[in-house]
Image (cartoon, rainbow, N blue to C red):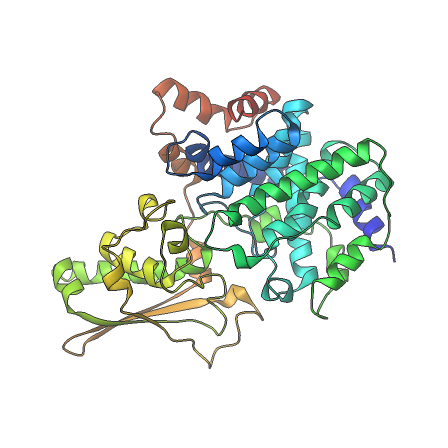
Length: 437
């Protein structure tokens, strides 16, 4: 089978349903919430000004790169379990950048987004967990292909032209997890969106490329012998992956691999306070904090002693301590620049204790859990276990997240942005696209 051609055929001919389009609307709203503070310079970030100096603001490719970086800069953006990465911060920057140059109808835009997420999730399954374990950053690598697929659909390309575009995108796909904890991680999203746009432009210009064997080669080369290429096309859109398992919206501006640990910690904190005791009495008496998880469950949250706010997003130690102190993971404690040094003494008491009796995280990350145990000076232990599935069951208020992101705008501008984010008409899509300039 020519897998590249089979994938192209599905990208071209399948039709997202109303549920997929509604999920896409919610994804756009979250995208706006996480990118707006960076685009408007409302949070400390030296990356975007530096990128503007290098790339400028004029072309479709540079705009895709800037939007991709800005939307992933806070690590507050959505996640997809099948993809094991952040699909929207690659797909939507490519689509919005193209939309500014060649406006499309709203339903075409939403369908392209849904197609992009479908390809993202399927690629994640096809390359297996080995892709991530080998050191690839799925958002950068698989995201390049997902965004290219979305552009192919937006542009109404035929099957053979779509196959060419996918091949050009695949041969550019790259990105290393070794950059986690630095500004290059969000830049990966920008690079991937830019590469997808470049692949589309080259394809439209008539640049030649192989239409078969390229996606197959990419999957094989990056899966350590555990590739499942058939997963890329079987049972396509049954259901649409933007609906099930769906986009996971973040409640905190930190690595998703820290969230159930943060929530377990908050539950312990709230239970202590509910018993009538003070927070000071808890913090002063903690002598040890342990956090257990499946073996390999901290592969993304790998930073043990952060030295800045970006590294802190990937530190279980810092996240647990910050939640104990503030009952939240505050954006200012995880922004670019110096970290909150008041958190570090408590963070130094956190020990990682992988639960070797649990199946390795790489087998099924959906089964991930965190057990947080606080040991007090008198020997008392407070413990709570929180699973990833329990975390996902708590729905994130995306509309509220967007309203919070717009608080520094005038009431009139807040209303305009919020109304445009509903995406009920092509006019609203046009308005939102212009606001993202």
